[in-house]
Length: 65
Image: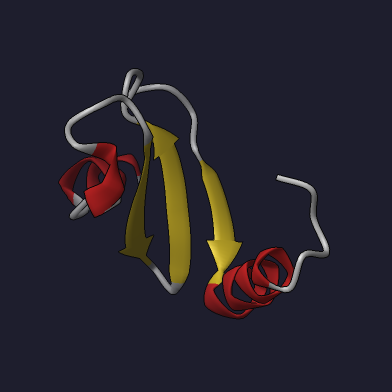
């Protein structure tokens, strides 16, 4: 799995304008998150459904971010 993560197509938000941020990649049916400042560090994984639910909750104001 480590090789797959290294070869994944990592994406950043267009709002970052090249600054350090969180990067996302789709791999093995999961969405992977990593810190752009430390791409070799451990990362988080979440299912597409869980990510969609989290984003809906953020957009509806259920989380104070």
